Structure formats: structure tokens, C-alpha cells
Amino acid sequence: MKYLKFLLVTIAFSVVSFTRAQNFDNVTITTTKLSDNVYMLVGAGGNIGVSVGDDGVFVIDDQFAPLTTKIEAAIKTLSDKQIQFLVNTHYHGDHTGGNENMKKLGTTIIAHDNVRKRLEDKPKDALPVITFNDELSLHINGEKISVFHVEHAHTDGDALLYFTKSNVLHTGDVYFNKRYPYIDLNSGGSVNGYIEAVKKGLSAINDDTKIIPGHGELSTKAEYQFFLEMLETLKDNVLSEIKKGKTEDEVAANSEITKVYDDLGYSWNFISSEKIRRTFYLSLKE
Image (cartoon, rainbow, N blue to C red):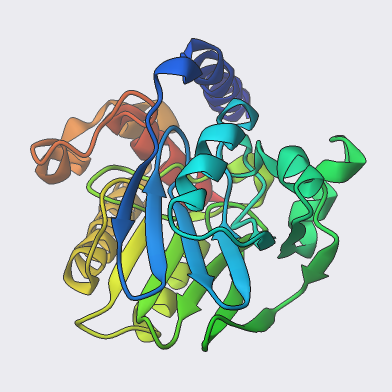
């Protein structure tokens, strides 16, 4: 338990430090066209998905509040219509930080039930006004957008979104491309749930699907499949150590567990190889 608390405190401190360290004035919002009407926006925080068309603008996630003006300006280059709907893929601040600003622009915010619950200490205008429990469909800009909840993955309120005509999947933080994922155990996340969530995402797509990950570059089904294989390999490796009676600290210190992916550069400043080993142990030991 003490190590769980240590991990959570460390992660919380890292999030705060990361946010404070951001010089938002220097952030540039870049736009990548994925289909006739779907785009990926990258700035600081979670990757943003945007759909534009005759029905207006539909947005997935909104990064940090100080970036709203820049995000809005980037969207204005794609469409002069209002931002009608915003879906939060989960509650973390680098995906929901702009909610209050978006509401003031007249945007309707949508999210899973648990996202609203976890944002209840935020200003009223930052809260989703439409929530769902399992799945939701939106019909906008000439296509169906399927929104489906995945249980106990990155958090307890994650959603994947699939643009059925454009063949684009937005995973939220159920995918960190080419890096170890953050699995928020303190907010209902789990290793097993995360793996099942990735499988669900993969089952919805094909080899031509373009994937907007929560963090990292635009991706493909093959890369998402490799990410799943990484998760399953780490799970098997950690379970093997648990069966041998290894302690949390012993697993956290055993670099052989993650060596293959460490060598590929999956360890990063927020989730190091030691942290991912500890996270897997804490989740799988329960």
C-alpha cells in the first residue's frame, strides 16, 4: 500500500509539474487532414479529433484552458461554423482543461457518466451536460460517430470514438503510441481492463483505419496491434515474477521484464520503465 501511495503521489506531482512547466505561449497547434472532413490537432496535452461539415464542428478533447484560443483559431481555418459538440475521452486535465471555455463558446459537452462524477469539483460550465453509460451514436457531418465506453482501462470513464465513414478511430489514452501507457490505478484503471479496451478498439477497425492516439503520432492498426502485444508481453513477464514470489520492489527493479521495449524507446519522462513495471505489479497482484 505504501508503494501504491508513493506511485500515485509521484504521478500527481508529475502532472502538476508538467502543467506548470508548460509555456503555452510557445505551443503551436498543428493540423493533419485524415479524411474529407476529419482532422487531427496536436498541441500540448491529449491529441484532438475534429469533424467539420454542414452540421457544424465536432471536437474530441480540448487539452488545457490556456490553449483554447489557439485551438479555436486552428479549427477556424477548417470551418467557420460553431463548435457544436465536444466529447471528453476521459477526465484528465490535459483532455478536459478547456471545457469551461468551450461551454462559453456554446459547445455541448458529452462524456461517460464517470467523467462527470470525477469533474464535479470543477466549475459548472466545465461539466459534461450529456452523459452515457455504455455507448452512444452521433450522426453529424454525413457520418455516424460511434462512441463506446471501455471499462477500467486508463481510468473508469474512458471512451473510444470511431468515425464510420472516414474510418478514423480516436482512442483517447487507451493508446500511447510508441511509449508506455499511463494506467491510472487510482481512478479505476487496470492492466486487464486496458488490454481488453485495446482489443475492443482493434475489433472495430481494419488495416486502412487511421488512429488518433491519446498521445503520440498518428497511427495504424498494425502499430496498435504491436502496442497490444507489448502490453500482453509485460503482463506475462510480471505475472511470472509474481508467481515466483517476487516483491513489488524486486519487480520494479528488474529491467529484464521490459528490456525489449526499453530498447525501442518506450520509457519516457512521465512513465519510465520502472514505473510501468511497478504499475503492472500493483494492478496484477490484486
